[in-house]
Amino acid sequence: MRVPNGMPVYRYIALDIANKIVRGELKINEKISGRSTLAGMYNVSPETIRRAIAILEGMDVVSSIQGSGIEILSISAAEKFIEAYKNNEYLNTIKENIFDIVEKKKELDLILQNNLQKLIDYIERFKNISPFTLIEISIKESSWVIGKNLDEVKFWKNTGATIVAYRQGENIFVSPGPDYRFKAGDIIVVIGSSDVYEKVCNFIYEENEL
Image (cartoon, rainbow, N blue to C red; front, side):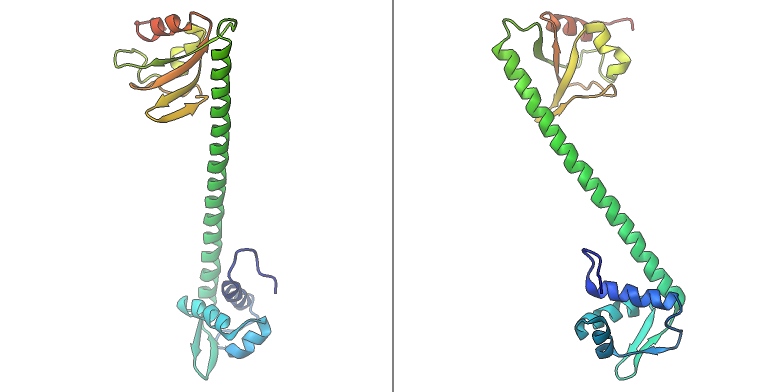
């Protein structure tokens, strides 16, 4: 008996019995062997069989009476049991995929933050000879760009600067895309030529025709 990874043995046995009922290998009103015999067939303990049968009883697939064996009650109930398992497996797969994506995103964010810090350190060490400047600028309530996104204000076109990250409180978000929307209280980290600070401040704090 090969049980799929991560599936409890008793659940696998319950599914196997349900599948045999749906396929017609086990008939309605037919009595199948008692727990001890089934334990020998599946090479498991009677307790494992008891748990498998209990699941099927809970779904009205079979009925188990002490000393009378196990009676098959319903094909449709067996089908519902199998379908419910498939739906749960599908949802579990989606959940696992989401968790994997979230973990990978965390790893990428960490890599980006580390590289951003390296860039900051590098520019700081060689700021006298570097053609680029990396600075932080606060987005205050008076800025006309609040509520607008990068693409909408044509930030790079109007300033020649690139936003490499932004901070909201204690959180830092690296490499924001064109959909990043300016918010009061944000601190943007920009890189550009030596006069980048003046260009960006003039742009975000003066009304501009786009």
